[in-house]
Length: 431
Length: 207
Ligand SMILES: Cc1cc2nc3c(=O)[nH]c(=O)nc-3n(C[C@H](O)[C@H](O)[C@H](O)COP(=O)(O)OP(=O)(O)OC[C@H]3O[C@@H](n4cnc5c(N)ncnc54)[C@H](O)[C@@H]3O)c2cc1C
Ligand code: SF4
Ligand code: SF4
Ligand code: SF4
Ligand code: SF4
Image (cartoon, rainbow over all chains, first blue to last red; front, side, top):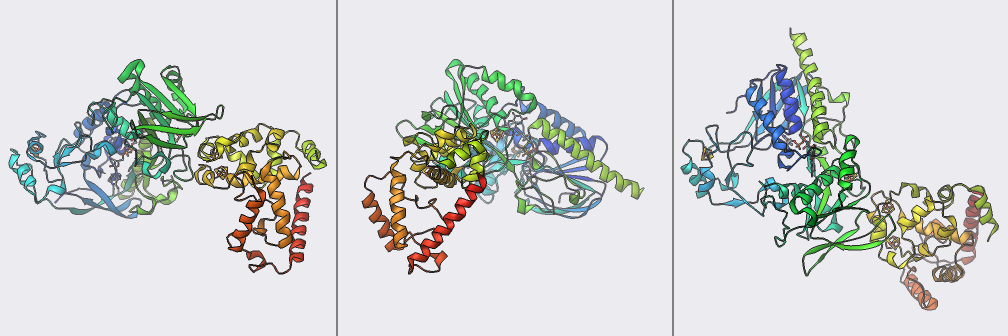
């Protein structure tokens, strides 16, 4: 049974992405007791799946490593992975959280040696690579990604009860595989809650005219991050899914599912910058042979990012076409997606062919409006409002709005401070 | 040019957009267009016209009054509703196109040989006599263009088609009159005349 020692001076952080990690660490480093509940088998959230960060084009692993070190060193912080908050009762200063923990089938003896993965035969689509999961599969015993924290393998529940599970157990020299693990539900107290469950990419299948579900060479921006990553499904090579051909002529479609009353109403705010960044991936991969074409309504490189935009604009290998693409069809002879539309600067009709098309899909809240385990005020788009009715529950990062990492982290620090104020009040009354 | 046209020119001297907002059905939506281009790219007929809806909306904002009102683009709309289904801002594009056509017609600015409007006139007069008119609710010619935008090579043939559709009750839900047939065309004509008068009053109130 998982033991969590918590009181109503404890801060519960829901979601262990970059925002939840930040809030948890900031609070824990002031001496508060913090319990972090993360649904995935590892912390870090979606930035772990990015190749490089705008605007500096540095690696997310760098910041994640620092956070992981801070987390390891801090005795005030308890991290529960594969855990989900299913209910929160009570009020500011006195909450009771119910948390469901799924079995990992690997205990903390695990050294990350990987013998279990070698022994197991079953393979699965690798969810870490989004829709490119089938390009390079993962085993039924696996480490979700190279830098995963904790560095502990996971056994896919699908192999439990099969020979593979026994093979994994047999291969482990450290007695770390525990096939008897069960799902558990635990309850503990908390004085304040930081809600940091983040975002998910908008479902590209719903943008019917773009044919994401029909054309192999139409992918999303999150998939393109995986493709560019040397740890990713193509080993960092920009190869298109249909035939493995080099993707040198790449089109990006902005606002795919954002700013659209048929899809997400809001501007997702980061996808213009993400695309500008991704043109660097094309340039870095192919030099002058790599061409990027960006189809956009307007480029929203918010505040300090204007310079980044200007530098991409100055690159002769990047073109900008002011037009929301109307539809995509496939050239069945070569698998090239063909973009159809009318441009706004001249009203010219185009039908342009590319090796690969990247849909700059937007962000939506990862928790559906209707399924919050606690009463909380959300806006029309499902992001959490900073409302007094939320009592001692404070949103951090992309649970509150579509934000880049910098802003998400600042906002998370603010949320941590609010949570600290609540537990300080509790401490004050309890003496 | 009609007097009404001159009055409108004088009144809205500085802003054709305001004129459209005040006088064209659904015209107040024009300013919501963000020029994304999806309507232009999705319109199945757009490539056969001078100006797709996106461009028309920009021309309105740019004050290109005469070019817009004498254009035949809005007369080409077949009401397929593709653009409405796709517009990210929810503009009632089809209706604006018809509204513009109607307004141009009222101001006597439609090119005389424009086939859709010629046919529309014939059709209207014909229907008025027989009382087999549909979509009374919206009064004037906004909807009788519906379905006839493909260019009319043979007006009579299409008229028959229209009448057949009506016979098959495909075009004439007579809800407003509470029945499917018109027993007393005279009364109907009075209604039409009244509607016309109200519409005239609305426009002249604006002029
Ligand atoms: C294509 C693309 C490229 C990007 N590139 C950049 C970039 O270069 N630079 C930049 O600054 N930003 C970039 N961003 C934005 C960046 O990804 C986000 O700002 C960042 O991920 C926000 O972190 P978060 O912690 O708020 O959310 P998340 O990363 O989504 O983390 C939320 C965490 O909560 C967990 N969780 C969810 N629900 C529950 C639950 N019910 N219970 C427990 N845990 C739960 C999730 O598993 C996840 O670990 C990019 C975004 C996209 C789409
Ligand atoms: S579970 Fe055992 S075999 Fe698998 S990685 Fe951990 S220590 Fe190695
Ligand atoms: S950031 Fe850019 S691509 Fe993303 S929704 Fe806003 S305008 Fe569209
Ligand atoms: S689709 Fe809508 S917003 Fe886009 S150009 Fe057409 S009318 Fe304007
Ligand atoms: S309704 Fe008219 S303007 Fe709209 S797409 Fe169809 S033909 Fe084009």
